[in-house]
Amino acid sequence: MTRSPRPEQPAITVFQQDGTASGAPGITGFVSLVGAGPGCPDLITVRGLRAMQGAEVILHDALLDAAFQELFPAQALALPVGKRCGKASTEQADIQRLMIEHAQAGRRVVRLKGGDPLVFGRGGEEALALEAAGIPFEVIPGVSALLGAAAGAGFPLTHREVSRRITVLEGHHLPDSAAAWRDLALSGGTLAVYMGTRTIRALASGLLDHGAAPDLPVALVEQAQCPGQTSTFSTLAHAAAGALCPATSGPGILVIGEVLHHRFHPTSEVPHEPAAPVSGSSREARPRGGRRERRAS
Image 1 (cartoon, one colour):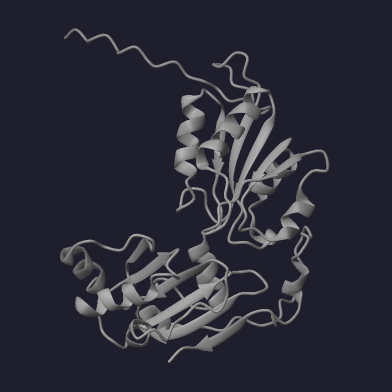
Image 2 (cartoon, one colour):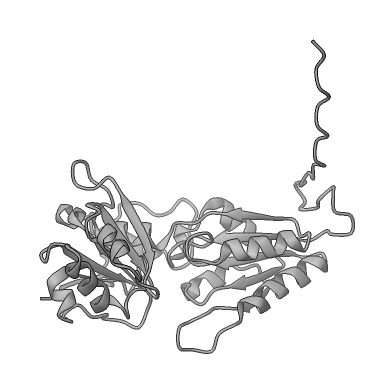
């Protein structure tokens, strides 16, 4: 039997340790899309910290603890490019242009993003823009706001025999059909809503109208893993009545589901210091007085 000739293999670009790409002559810069975690500097990954400390240009979000800047290299150009609802913001197109221009000039660029770059962080758009421009880049994942909120407020996101499913939504755009509402209301799992502090009442009412239980527990965690973290616990009925309101002006995430009946309470004092001290993390070695809980009813 005669074998068919193997199809021609696509050209392979090898990214070297110094950030250059063997298949992209003339481009010596490199971009790292780095997830900073939910806010506190000591939750960034080791890989993310190394990329940041080797950067010549850092484009950073607004939703980060100011202590992050103490970790920036002294010689790095740090540019705030955060986007905040209702406030002056940097356009996404301008952020992408800055990344590309600095990389084309041969610089190592870090785009430092809150949470994880690929979870409601527009990291996919930035990665595609870099790829289209022929810029070598990497994506370094981070602790997402959802994971930070659950660990900080003390509840699981899944629990055996209670929740085997997590549904993650963006709160600015609620479901637009009865079928979609029913799927959420009757999912039987954990529902997590990013950017939902302004639509709490509408979300709760929609879930109730389509079959969710009025006593289903709800948590609103604001400024997760930061000194001002606030956790408010309520029920779907109270939330629909307007009793669950943000306590801060910072970012918040909503969690809805039976998993909230299985809360835990981490030890208030951490018995060890971080192996590599990070500015702003010393508060974790003493009672966490900056965190508070409340109940809306």
